[in-house]
Image 1 (cartoon, rainbow, N blue to C red):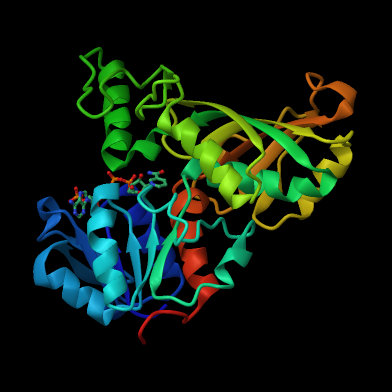
Image 2 (spheres, rainbow, N blue to C red; image 1 turned 90 degrees about the horizontal axis):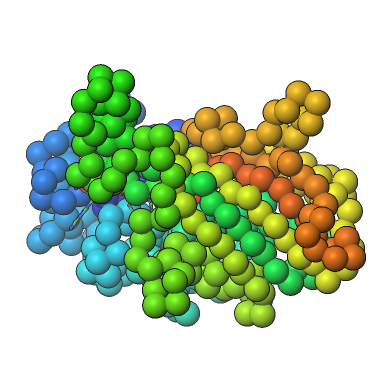
Length: 344
Ligand SMILES: NC(=O)c1ccc[n+]([C@@H]2O[C@H](COP(=O)([O-])OP(=O)(O)OC[C@H]3O[C@@H](n4cnc5c(N)ncnc54)[C@H](OP(=O)(O)O)[C@@H]3O)[C@@H](O)[C@H]2O)c1
């Protein structure tokens, strides 16, 4: 990864990508930033230098792809469908944060630390799909626990941060909080409802069977990433008035009795996780402690009494969905494939 283009650079994920790439030493001279025409003319600071944001259309974007080895797409799924083929034709490795390519069998779907092996056959150029944020956070914690036995079922109830709906939703939540304190009407242009002091069902479309798209992604993407088409996946996804970091109550059913202490030891030694499980002090994972952190916090680790024969395990996780749930995992994918595919 040397010459990089970000599409969606002004958004919530884009901002995080810029911050991580700055930390990784990617200089402004090697970075092109794109967004919609609304942002053209803005400039963003990167490692002390100013980079002009360009509109992601026409010859400019083609020229940027020609000069890049790695492209991060962090805009809409429609934008990804439009731009990914152009970037691949320019010999780029594309890492897509949207849902556009997650079901495409030709595009690896990767949670780094969980199924990196699927990148072994990746020669590039091509598209690698970054999974859904709730799925990444859940699987980062669930995958290592498969050492306890065969996982038969996972049930995930989410408490998702408002920033999962993008930068505008995040700033509207802050505006709602200020309006609430001032006893003024709440702005609801982006959220479409009161978000502050409220909890609401995930804002994605609801399918005919009553399952919403976020819950569907958890189901289909988890099966694909864990390479287990028989895995039962249940979930209920809701938004909570948290700015960043998703929390998830996770219940697992195994094919044999499992020991909570063995689970704790596995989680404590797994890379990318941090156990926060102080029962005496009542300190457990909280999204404010996971925010802006790379690690997914896990705690409340216990046997699930709702599963017979001691085969159930329950725990609670909190992870920054803009970091491991999006930008960090995307950068880890780029690092995992190293120089493969890009034309430099
Ligand atoms: N937020 C999360 O936690 C999260 C986690 C995982 C994956 N994702 C996915 O990542 C993507 C970005 O999400 P986000 O939360 O960062 O959204 P966001 O804050 O709303 O930002 C969207 C970005 O896309 C740009 N954009 C919109 N339409 C465009 C177009 N036609 N051409 C080029 N750029 C366009 C926007 O530019 P302007 O500023 O000019 O409008 C902005 O930079 C989405 O596909 C989302 O599903 C998000």
